[in-house]
Image (tube, rainbow, N blue to C red; front, side, top):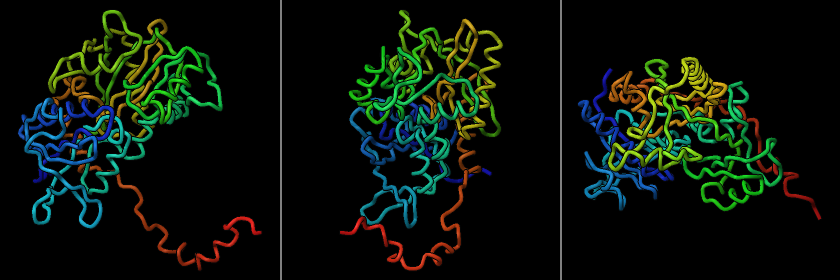
Length: 382
């Protein structure tokens, strides 16, 4: 049943990928508006402020923060939760059918935004807090792939206490970062540790993997509503000289300026010119990742291919991928259909976890006096 309130498109957020999030949000707003939907664009600034921004803004309008004529919003998580427009006398609640989250990296992709919008009482696209957190944590995700028997490269934390079980050279990645920013190559453990200590992107945690320059990047996406559907396979193309890594600049800046920049117009083979068996295997791996992670919405799976052996490895997932992977869906589904289906899934298939209060007060009644439970907790007596 169609709702009467508008859809929201939420972009920005406190993340190193803030600018790319803006581009994705502006793309999504235009797609939905062109399809005849009522859309409220909402900008989340790097400092945590929320704004309802005018329709049809451009990327350049965000160079100095929220665009002119933006309306500040308040996010309330208690009482009558929701997003409110500030007014001279009181505040006016913003009624929304569901929110399309275009928040790459950081708290957006890592599950934090899912928690925020759950507290706000606004259905939002993407995965749950728990699934999103595993997707963002490269060490946890690698461990999950290993436990599920899904082929992936060895991945271990950079530590001063232990040595990696495999020798260098290494790729060093932010443990809690996105797929492009802060990634380095280190010849040995000492260099990896030095990078982990000095890089602003690696200080909160870093992982290492074997550096395999012969491996080729491949991407595939899936969506989970109205049923599991998987795109064709993409092979991103690196610069003419063949850079060592598929860089942030190649991924996001190759397409020029504007809301169509990066990804959509970045150089690539699509469908990838690889053996049919590789296409089949990629779809199988995407289906297995969807099954074991419980990720929902629109998800991109990044793969690595050994062209000599046709061996495929799952590298990582992007739970809110750049441009929402609309360019991968284009041959199969109109962009507006993909976005509206994601919003409908958020509204109609909300994941509900056990609520607070389980136990009916039995533990509280059995506890007795708290003072008695403190005996022995005050340390050794003189």
